[in-house]
Length: 342
Image (cartoon, rainbow, N blue to C red; front, side):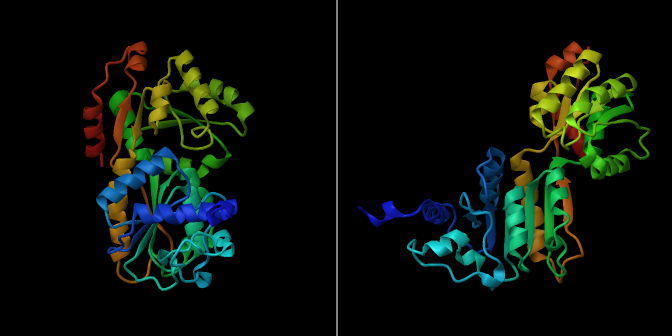
């Protein structure tokens, strides 16, 4: 029986990761590494688009069952063949891109929350870009001391457009409707602060109801709908739950109140419109932000550079618009409106 057949599952996963790494990106002239920890379609599309824009980027996959790769201080030289021992495999996939001596021009792009946490826990001083994070993902990472490491340049690219963009879209599809209803959860406080800043000076009237748990959502919607011209779904616990989102959409439809959001799935499910960022758009933004981080002179700031997805594109649901008696501009016209609102 060939020796490889007898390999334990974790070692086999690690070797598969090494094989994938060799196929997906051996060139490293510009020193970019894409760190992937899952096969989410959006993450895969983002990685493909970024490698088209940055062809020399190297791809590193964390194997299934390996939560993180070794700390910089403990990372050994990579094995030259796939015959490394199981102890090394259990510690993570070790390649030349993970050596302690990292040239200052190198950049790691961690795609998604799991990869971002692994990259932060690894430590190091090279520039780091955490991409494709939701706002809730970022809030979960903010307590980590590694995110504020002095002298390290760190960027965060959120996958959702800014609230300013969402308000521009709301004004374009529903001109004159300024009573913006929303249901907030316990995790919504930082999002509400950002929304309030975006709404300041725009004569918006925020109508807020709290839903401390899932059982409170129906009551919160009954309280907020009569005093709202439209509903905004925040990218919080409600916006990330299909059941909660559907409850908001059904309540809005029953009351004749349009719903605005920040993802395409919401529009397909019955929202009137959303400002969205595609993985391809995010990849172009990541390339620009990554180049600034990699080329930045001197030590980084006390905290990361955080960017919302930009530019955003508009998505509308014509069926919902007709049911509400609305005639909306085209998605292209609305997208141009979003671009002009910056």
